[in-house]
Each structure stands twice: as C-alpha cells, then as structure tokens.
Length: 177
Image (cartoon, rainbow, N blue to C red; front, side, top):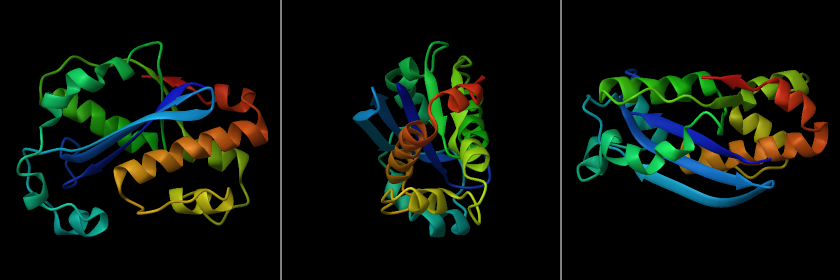
C-alpha cells in the first residue's frame, strides 16, 4: 500500500488552531519518510488541549503558521493520493478549517479512517481508540498525542490490517474529499 498518514494536534476547540502536524509516508507497506512541525495558530490555547498534548503557546512562538508550511505539504493532498488518519473526521476537518482560515484552495484527495476500519475489522476490542488498537496489534505507541507518534501508529495500523485482513475491505473504506 502507498499512502500518507496524518495527525494534527490543536490549541483549542477551534478546528483551525493546529499546533502540530505530522505526515508519515508509506510506500509498498514501508514507512519511507516522516515530517513533523509545530505550528503557530492565530488562536488562544486551551489549558485542556495543552495538558493533553503538552504543547503550550511559548513552544510555538517561532513556529511557522499552517499557511507557511502548506506549499511543502500540499503535494500529499491531491486527487490521486490516499490520506490516512485515525479518526479522520477530526484530522480532515482540521485540514479543511486551516485551508479555509488562511484562504487557501480546497484540497481533494482520497481518505481512509483507521478508526472506521478498526471498528469493522476488529469489533471485539473494548474500544477503538488509537492506543487500544495499537496495543491489540502489538504496535508500540510512544508518546501518545504527539502528532508524529500518532501518525506513525496510524500508518502501522493500516499496514498491519492489510496484512491480517487483506486490502479488499480497506479499499471499500476509501472515501473522496
């Protein structure tokens, strides 16, 4: 499988408040590249969000904005690309909100949600949170809620699901954005 796994962390409940972003590139079922950056949002920081991911306003003072890094990552979000996330509804909504906020063109791509595939393929788990699914597949998830650690775990989940269940049920779960 070839895809890019993404994960965002946000400063607050506002979807355009991305404070970190990770991309993990997979080619032929192997992680071949990783990208991670802190982001400086134009919003306040929620103490609750910072407590979850450990990123505070002081950490992003010199970080680029989403608008600054978009030209670098935009090639991963085209119609012929598969973007994977665990709870893709959240991550895709953050991407869309950031594009809207910075008045950037919409991105159109294929998306697959490992939360949805886990619910379908692994119904006996007590829940389908990233850490639970990772543990059930013997995938190490170090530093949960770090965007890079979460994106790596998401990539490894999809690779493992493809090995265990085949790619046919995964292909059925692909949607277009």
